[in-house]
Amino acid sequence: MTGDGEIRRLALITGASGGIGADLARIMAREGHDLALVARSADKLAALALEITSMGRPPPLVIPIDLARPAAGGELAAALTAAGAQVSILVNNAGFGLNGAAVALDPAAQLEMIDLNVRLLTDLTLRFAPDIIRSRGRILNVASVASFLPGPGMAVYYATKAFVRSFSLAMSEELKASGVTVTCLCPGFTATAFQARAGIEAATMARVPTMSSLAVAHSGYRAMMAGRRLVITGFANKLGVALLPFIPDSLLLPILAGLQMKRHV
Ligand SMILES: NC(=O)c1ccc[n+]([C@@H]2O[C@H](COP(=O)([O-])OP(=O)(O)OC[C@H]3O[C@@H](n4cnc5c(N)ncnc54)[C@H](OP(=O)(O)O)[C@@H]3O)[C@@H](O)[C@H]2O)c1
Image 1: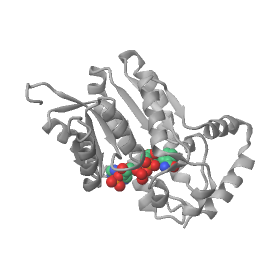
Image 2: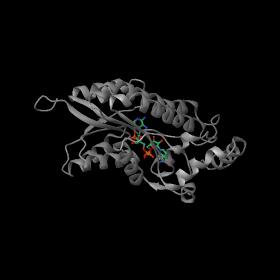
Image 3: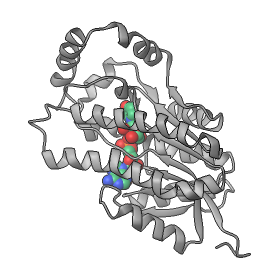
């Protein structure tokens, strides 16, 4: 509760310690949202909270937690309750990818990816939906252009993002009557720590068109506030997705495999 006994209504951002999530936090703080910042890196979250406070905004609620653990959703909810807070905007942004042949990559790490990218996102959406509905709030789910196609060389990652897009679009319809909007953000290559964690060589990034995390975050925030169902960032990504239905799998899959199987570290 706040000092006057009122519930503190927050925009909760997962993966707020860096990249797209941190820039979403900066934008949303500037636009007047009271925030809950969630990720594992307590030091980075504290530094961002300080930056936001020094903008003259209320100190964000900082919750350092490993979201890939099955208990994380419950622990996050308990931390919010203890702070007298409820979620009115949910930004499901935390996620990671792994580059390489699925049978060669660590199976446990790939299951962890499903736990974070899929299980946790679903858990938080369902868990906080009643509060979000009560405040006629919003949900922003970060998928990827990878959600539009199968991805040999990043097979599990692409499949997790296909889930996020499918789930987001279905939920946008299910929640429409409640006044809650669900927006699915589909970025292409974005310059963040994502590629290093995925094991993608830095040289690859130098060869592909890349957007800044700030531009992607702006695009996602605008789409969320406008209540749009889906936003693909950048002209090249929009064009690529538009052309996909015209390329047969027999052509597309070997091309992608050729590009993605070669580039991992
Ligand atoms: N960058 C791209 O090219 C790109 C393209 C399309 C889609 N995306 C998507 O955009 C989203 C944000 O990624 P990004 O590019 O901003 O990458 P990033 O800079 O690596 O940020 C990922 C965020 O997720 C958090 N995170 C990772 N594992 C976590 C865990 N187990 N528990 C809690 N938090 C965890 C990280 O914080 P900690 O490490 O502190 O936990 C970090 O804040 C992801 O869903 C990604 O799939 C990225």
